[in-house]
Amino acid sequence: MQALISNMARPLSAVALAALLAACAGSPIGPSYQMPADAVAAQPAASLPFAGAASAPSSADAAAARPYTPAPLPTHWWRLYNDATLDSLVSQALAHNTDLRQAAANLERVQAMESEVAGAQKPAINVNGGPSFGHASGLSVLKPGYEPPDAFHYSVAGSVSYQIDLFGQLQRASEAAHNSTLASAAALDLARVSVAASTARAYAEICSAGHRLQSAHQSVQLQQRAVEVTERLQQAGRTGTLDLPRARSQLQQLQAAVPPLQAQRQSALIRLATLTGSPPQAFSSEAVNCTTPPQVAGAIPVGDGAALLRRRPDLRQAEREAAAATARIGVAMADRYPKVTLGLSASSAGLASGFAQRDTLAWSLGPLISWTIPNTGVVDARIAQNEASTRMALAKFDGTVLAALRETETALSSYAHELDRKAALQASRDEARIVAEQARRLYAGGKVGYLESLDAERSLASSEAALATSEAQLADDQVQLFLALGGGWEPT
Image (tube, rainbow, N blue to C red; front, side, top):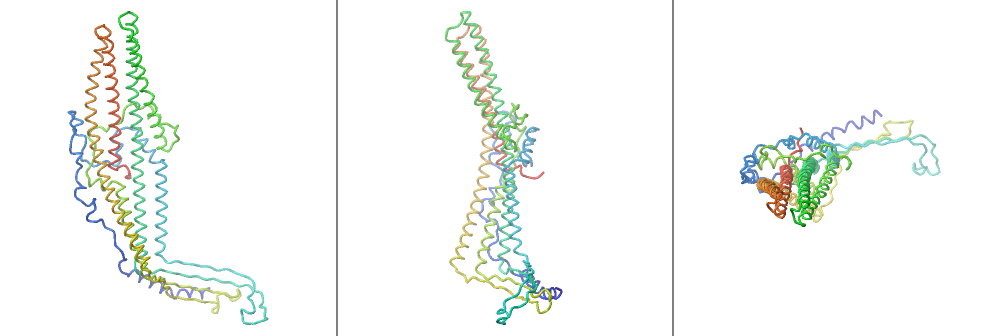
C-alpha cells in the first residue's frame, strides 16, 4: 500500500498545476449582469418623492391635512398602530404561517442546489475496491487445459479528476445558481411582507366589522324604542294605523343588516386563525372582542421612490432572476469550446499474498479533452434561448418596478381621498343625528307625522352605516399602503 500511495503522490503536482492554470484563466465568456442604463429603476424619476404624498386632502381636519411624512418606513410598520394584540398576531403569523414555511424550505432547497453546482468546481475523488476468491480461466492466462488454483484476490483503485474551467462555464453556472439563491431569499422576504399585511388586514376587518355591528345594534335599539313609542301613541289614538307597521318594517330592515356583518367578521376570524398557523376554530379571543378599527396616530411615514426600490423584495427578486438568466448565456456559450479534465488514477490488483507489490501497481495521468464538434445550429439555439430569457427577465424587472410605483401612488391617493370622504360622512352623520333627535321629540309631541320621523331615522341609520363603512375602508387602505411600501421583512 505504501508503494501505491507513493506512486499516486508523485503526480499530484500535476493536479496542482491544473488548478493554477484554471486560476490564471481569462474572464469567463458571456455577458456579466449589470442594470441596463435604460432600466426603469435607473431613471431619476423612479427615485423621486411620491406625487400622492405631496398633495394633502381637502379636509379641514388638521390631522388629516398632512396624512404622510417623508420619514423612512420603520422596520416593523405594524407597531405604528400601538396595538399589542396586532403585534402579537403578526409575530405568531411570522413564526407559524404555512406559506412562510414553504418559502423557507424552498430557499433551503435552492441553497443546496447552489452547493451542488459549486461542487463541480472542486476535484472529484473516487475510490473503489474489494476482495474476491476464485481463479481465472486457463485460456485467459494463455494456458489451454490449465486450471489455475483457487486463491484470494484483491483489487483497489483510486482516481482524482478536475475540470479546468478554461472558458468560465463552471463560474457562470455558479453565478446563475447564486443569483437564483438570492432570488429565493427575496421571495421569502416577499412572503413575510404578504403575511404581515394579510394578518393586519384580517385583524382590521374583524375590528371594523365589530364596529359596524356595534353601530347597527345601536340603530336597532333606537328603532325598537321608536316602535314602542309608536305603539303607545297608537293605543292613545294619536297616530294613524300605518305608523306602527312602518316602524316595524324599518326595524326589520335594520335587523337584516346585522347577519352579513356577523358573517364578515366570522370569515375574517377564520382567515386570521389560519394565517397564524392555527385551526380555523382557534380564534384569537382578543380579536373577537375588537370594535375599534386600528388607525395609525399621526402622519404615515412613506419615504420616497429611492427607498421603495431598495426595500421592496419583489424588485430584488426580479433583478436577481435577470442576473441569473444573464449568467446562463455564458454557460450556453461555453458549449462551443472543448472541455479539459485532468485525471489521475492508480490501482493495485493481484493475489492477496502479494498485496501492493510493485508488479500489482498501475497508474496513469493525463488530460481528457472532450469536445462535441460544434453543431452551431443547436448551440446557437441554446444561446438564443438564454438571451431571450434574459430579455424577458429584464422586462419583468421593469414591469415589477412600474407596478411597485403604481401600487404605491394608488394606495396614497386612495387613502387621502378616503380621509376626505370620511370627513364629509362624519359631518353628514352629525347633522342627521340632530335632525333625528328633533324629529323624535316632535313626533312624540304630535307636532309632525310619522313619515317625517321615519325619514329622519332612515337618514341617520344610513349615515351611521356609511361612516362605519368609510372607517373600515380607511383601515384597509392603510394596510394596503403598507403592503405597497413593502416593509416588514427586515430582521429585527
